[in-house]
Image 1 (cartoon, rainbow, N blue to C red):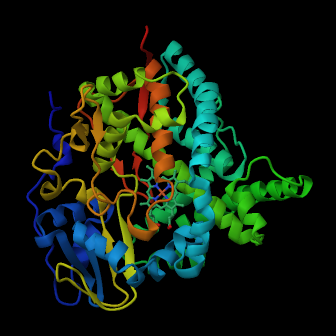
Image 2: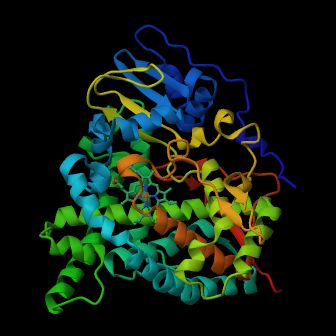
Length: 485
Ligand code: HEM
């Protein structure tokens, strides 16, 4: 009953390591593969001994790429202090996310992580699932989908999910409801500007010669001109949220619920620029990750009816108004989400910069200032890690049947270094549990009642676009079908 092997996941041609020439190194190959860098490097890692490869961009510029769990553990955990964000990442992202948690190291990171961690305790998560997510599903998602089903309209599900998670994150982190998933699907200036900022920030990373975007920025031309405009729209939006919150804090002696933003403002962090960076980062973390994961998940589910029926069985065994514990307990759905993100990780690549010279566990020599990047996308496709059936969508890889008489599924996780989809070590994703709860609750509300049918040509597979967070190119056009009908 295993699904058909998805041929397009496998590299299409024989792979060879790029040649490195004197002076120019592999610069020409890097330029030629600029638009498909993720797949190019992933293919190279498949055939590299120890799944690590040092790319010579040109003389004096080298970057290490790896899909080796021991190396990932080394940089993210055991030698954590030696691998920071570095000037390259920080400089590229600074215009968009400033000095927020995603873009700093050391004391500032520690402080922000400590403060943000309150947002993710059991009490907050319960409120998130039982109140915020629940209301967004019943008041906005379901009515929207019912009407799409009734009219047979094709809708872009990636967009719907982004709207959903945008409303969610703003409510839980800032106590503010942007009401973006309304039936009219409003096109706000903010959403477009946010999208553009993400895209141009991602494109900066794809520039083989970073000086190019810096010159464009200096001259205020082309994409960098658009970036400047988009970012000012985004910052203005964030600042409005902050001003409203400050007003609210002034008017009320105590707040009935304390959100992340209030916590930042109450701990003396009233510097507007810093709080603005924080707001933008949380929107990025909350909006773009789970929506990406669910988009690809629903695509895989549509190709694998056996998995869909198993998920449905689990959903139907729960009550309709799911409480926190029931959502936590959706074991099969949890496994299928892990499996989907193995193939389509929301953050497909991530890099760290060496503070001092070092030697990686596989013997690779790292010089101070070099970037070591690990690729969850490549790792999820390695035969050595997942076996010869790695291209198959098989939630059962993550499950065991219990010995007890009722034979329930039991989740069997993989270590965070083999599966660094949520990062690993001291900087592991703070929102991991929140993300799983949200995704499972959405799936329960959605799939119980509707079937999501891709409106794409038979045999055509959507394209995976790696940005800061990965996207489905051009969106995910679907038709919604009521199950009872
Ligand atoms: C499927 C969903 C998600 C995935 C795959 C994911 C993945 C990641 C990854 C790879 C990182 C490391 C990024 C870096 O190197 O800076 C990270 C960090 C982080 N994530 Fe998530 N994330 C998800 C959802 C969320 C959600 C919903 C939130 C809530 C707002 C969140 C909050 C954070 C925060 C605050 C950090 C920074 C941790 C630190 O630097 O100490 N994430 N996440």
